[in-house]
Length: 471
Ligand code: NAP
Image 1: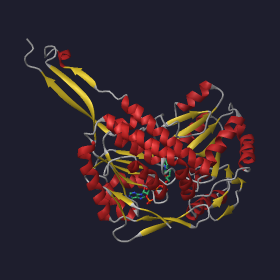
Image 2: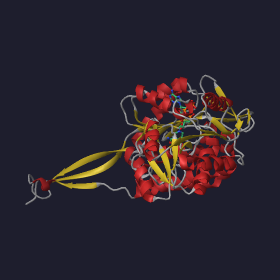
Image 3: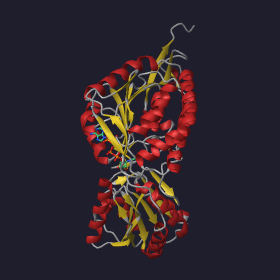
Image 4: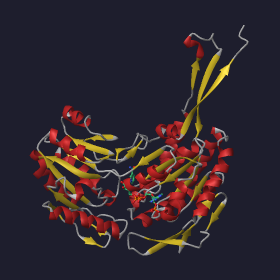
């Protein structure tokens, strides 16, 4: 079976305990690859390597860093078909979606390179205060890398959600320890192996895979880590918040992205966007449309159209059977409490077709929990005021969509939603990747992007030039 190794400093290593984890492909649940389960000692060694490499990498010129990334891009382009196949197999993504993830991740590297090339500092003139003569004191304000960054990503976009951390971190002069989600580790390791083939110096990026219970806390609590960039569930994000050492945390957590559909919506646009937003990659996207808030005047018609269109879908599998069981629990809870199962998708193990539950209410679990699967709940509201009130009861705040052809109404609602992004008349979505992206409340903190992430992954430094012989 194909096996991925740990990348620690210059070595591609096996687990020192001889422990491996077998990954099953979601398509057929058969074993497809193995990864190494790093020991706590190996996790610490990865940080040692990143810390040592930082001393030289931070002083590597910007042009040299950019040149290495040009070579990385070329190497990734050569391998993109092979990488997309592995990705599709490992996380059960349709081949075209896997190709799109690889292509968009390569595109993202280019965007960060452009953003970095445009990064500028600032000059501060001390004489503005009236205390100093001209040129006596001048401040040069520059950006400095932070040091070792810990990147942890989730299973659903193993490449895109890691490159959006790793590329800005390294390009800005930091070094990285990367812990991918277990399911996703094989493709992520294959992707980043190309970085070393293209000439990224050893130690700048270190990859540790394995059981979170063994290495998670060791990585998170190491005082040499200067920033943690995490994507995953709200529960694990909170755990990181509790045990980390007071460093900045870039948290991209769960979502419950609402589609607010007013009586003024273009129903065809809303239907098609909600179906694609709710069920792409089987609903396993942080920005999937996870709840529809429909005005009474449009709800019946919208529900019928959503059911009609969703029934035609042929979805990819869910990541595993346990995740599919969870969806089952939420549907049972909602129907037992009086919701109407308007579309009941067929299930076979982890393969599950689209379901739609109408007339849900806030006491049902599916209102407050993130389903992360192919079921879309609809809650009905009488008017704008109630829509905003219901939205405010959602704990999450990643994105929301407002569907209305009345631009005043759309902006009015948008201005009252506590989320990172509002999409007007389109599905909730991460891209384009040059747009800032992030959540509030249980969905995380800080807006990331290109320029935004470079700012977050560097710190300001002031160097004051003091001139004494000015006459
Ligand atoms: P998860 O279970 O929280 O895992 C996320 C990552 O954290 C994985 O690498 C996981 O490793 C690791 N992890 C788990 N426990 C840990 C610990 N104690 N210490 C350190 N690392 C630990 O999430 P998931 O199931 O992979 O992804 C789904 C979730 O991610 C959903 O809630 C979704 O909304 C969210 N998400 C958010 C965004 C966003 O941008 N806001 C994007 C995508 C996904 P193992 O796999 O080895 O356990």
